Structure formats: C-alpha cells, structure tokens
Length: 374
Image (cartoon, rainbow, N blue to C red; front, side, top):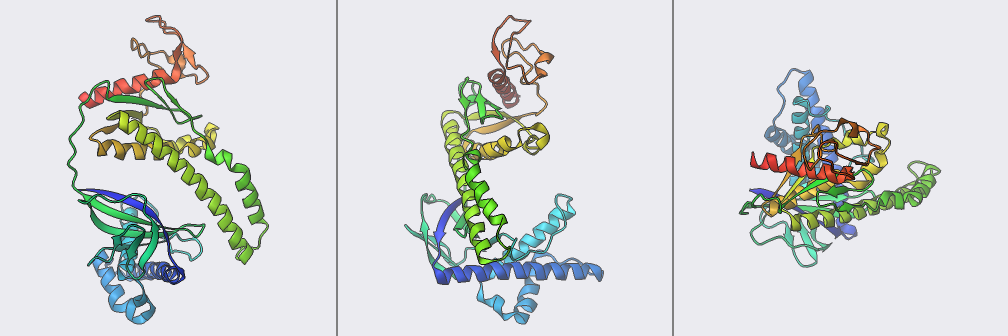
C-alpha cells in the first residue's frame, strides 16, 4: 500500500471558522495537558502512558474535568495526543528534542481527523469535514476511484487562509521501467539556477524571493514599527505572511512543472546526495540562493513522480568526484577542485572545452547507471 495526499484550499464561513478555532485551541490544550501528565508520572516514578492509554485518560478524565473538549471533533484530540507520543518516540530515539508546550500565538494552527461512517467526502466544489459539514473548496484534482480515504488535516496559514490535506491509500500496481541510457538522465545541482542535465540542458531559477525581496522588506519594516499584539500589528503580520506564501506558491508551482517535465521524459534520474542544510550555511556565501531555489523540494517531487511511473530517483554518494572525472575517458583531474575553473581540457584523452557542470552531470548519470545495474 502507498499513500498520497491531495491539498485543497477551503473557504470556511464564519460559523465554520469559529469551530476551527475551537478545535485548534482544544488540540493545543489537550497536548499541553497530556505533556503535564506524562512529566508528572515520570517525576513520580510511574510508567509512561502509551498512545492508547493516554487517549483513554483524555476521554475518562480530561473531558469530564473540561466539558468544552466535547464540543470539538474527538479524532482531532486523539491525533493531538498521538502527535505528542510521536514526539516522545523521536526524543527517546535521539532524533529530536524533548517535546515542548504549544503556545497559543506561535503554535501551528492545524488538526488531523480520521474518516468514519462517511464523515469526510469530496464533491465538485466542497469538502465534507467532521463538525464543520460541507465547506466550500477549490477542487483542482480528483482522487482516483480505487484510492481509499484515510484522514484529513485542516491548517490555517499565517495569512488566515485555510487548506485541507486529504490522505489516501492505494495499491501500487506499476510495472517497473527498463533501465537504459535513453531512459536515464543525470542532474548536477547548480547553485545559481536549479540543475544542469547530462543532455546539456540548463534549468534556470526565477528566484522568486529576490523578485519580492523589496516588497517583503517594506512589509516587515512596517511590522517592526507596530506594537506587538495590537490590531495593527496583527494586520501587518498577515500582510507579510501573505507575501511569504505567494513566494512559496510561485516556487512550488515552478518546481512541480519542472519535475513533471523530467518524469514524463525519463524513467530514472541520477543526482548527488547533497547536504542542502550545510550548503545553505552562510559560510558558503550562497545561502539565500540555495534556500530560494528549493532543490530539496524539487528532488522530493521528482522522487514520487518517477515512482508513480515505475521509475526511480538514484542518489550518488556526495563524495563521488563527479566534477573531477573526464566523462570521455574517466581520467581524474584534481586541479578541477577549484570551483573557479568552469571549463578545462583533459590531459589524458585530449578532449577540450569540457564544461564543468555538464561533465559532472554525465558522470553522475554513469555512476547512477552502475548502481542501478549492480
């Protein structure tokens, strides 16, 4: 079984908006209350409550003590407890820090609910959700008939717009693609763009953040002159958040189109396994460019699109010397470690005018094919 989420923009009316705010608040409240309970049990030497027992505690004790919890979707509260327990699991496995309390003004406004007895449905222009009923929505993509609906996550963004992410499960019945040179492409990351392909194509990046940088700076400058917590502050904060969201949507749309373009032409894409967080470090001098081009998001999109078509995204080791090897004869030229060298001549086979990026993409493709056929 595989999972796929479809994200829709929804437009709740005033009554539905109030119900959403109640649910956000109750989920945050239950999360914090259960964090208190687990901490207290630990201090008293008692055993940590499991997910199921923690949920039972909420139903038997918290809902009796705080009746307002019964006014919201019960599955939303259950999932809030499960999220806390997932946080504990990650902490015990040394994958994250100890769970923190959720603050009203800083916490993400979101909750997850599960399907039962047809309480979640999708129509032509609306979505049915528990405790909300039918909510007006922009339905841009319909799920396939064999997809089984599992859950829905309602989120309110910083600019007060709403989205719902609906999770589906489906059986994978895709025939694997045949590995050939023609069905495989190599992609080399390009810091001042997006990538250079083994076919010699360069994908530039519009850099949407730079395009809106002045507008965003002006909005944030106005925000700094407002009194924190005032109505004018909140209004200006939403304006700044709307610009951020617009930039993110532009970038996402561009990356969706580029990843679809490659997935439609090739079955296998070979890339380097890069540490994007390290590359975004200011010490490299290109942090903003790295964050603005969204290369990591691009690879995530490309990965699932290739798998949907029976293909695969192959990651070559980050220490593979793709730039130093001559793609014609395999000679390793350590002098090319100097990033200022954009073109070079091979002293072994005599090939001249080797383009650094295209050459690297070709070597990544060769190494990817070797890994695929090994």
